[in-house]
Image 1: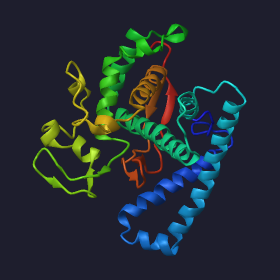
Image 2 (image 1 turned 180 degrees about the horizontal axis):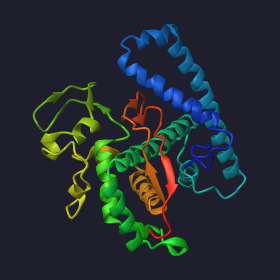
Image 3 (image 1 turned 60 degrees about the horizontal axis):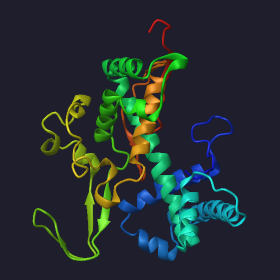
Image 4 (image 1 turned 30 degrees about the vertical axis):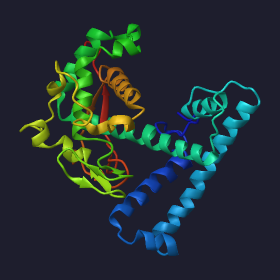
Length: 310
C-alpha cells in the first residue's frame, strides 16, 4: 500500500523498527480510552505514557515524511509513480490541480498502516484460531479449493476463481462476525440528529458502537449467535452493512474491504490444502488491549505438510 516493505511476515532481521513503533503506539493510544485524565497528562507532559507517545510520533512522522518526499521527488522528476495508494493520492492531486499537503498525506500513511496492515493480520489469526477448533470446516474448505481452484502447480488463484469459493467466503464472514479486527468505533455528530429509534443526538456528541458485541448479539443474529456456523452466510443475500458492521457502513465503509476479503481467501486457499495447522498449546483466545483486537501473545501453531494422497 505504501510501496515500502516492513517485514511483517518475514523472519530475517525481525520487524521493521517502524512496525515495532506503530504497534507500541496503538497500545498506548488505546490506553487513553480508559484513562480519564490523559488530557491533563498530555498538556502537562506528566507520566510516562504521554512522553512515550510524543517520542513515537516523532519516529512515525519521520518515516511518513521520508516516504512522502520520495514520492514527490519521483513525481517532479517525471518518473512513473508506483501502484501503491500513497502514489495514487499524489498522482490524483497533480492531475486535478488539487493541493495535497504533507500533513494530510501523513494522515493517509497512518490510516494505511492501521487499516491495511494490522486489521488483516488480526483477521487471519482469529480465522485460523476458529479453524483449529473446527476440523470439519477445514476439510470443506480444502475440498472446495480443490474443486474450484485445482491442485498443485496447475492451481488457479486468479481473482475470478477465488470469487467462486462460496463456502470459504462464508467461513471468512463468520470468523469476522465473531472476531472483528476493530471491536469498537465512534462518530462525532457535527449537528443535532435523531437516531431511527428516536434517540436525540446533540451536536458535538460521540456515538459509539461495538461490532464485537453486535456480532454476538442474539437479538441481531438469533439464539445461535455465539456459535461458529459459516452456513448462516450460504445461499442468502449478503446482510446489510449496518447489521454486519465489521467494515463500517455507509459513505465511511472500509475502502480495503474487497482486498481484505480476497487476501484472506487467497491465504486459506493456498495454505489449507498443503498444510495442517494444530493448536497444540490450547490458546484461550485472549486478546491484547490495542486499537485492533490482536491475539495476546500471537497465535502459535504446529504446522505439518498434508499427505501426498490428500
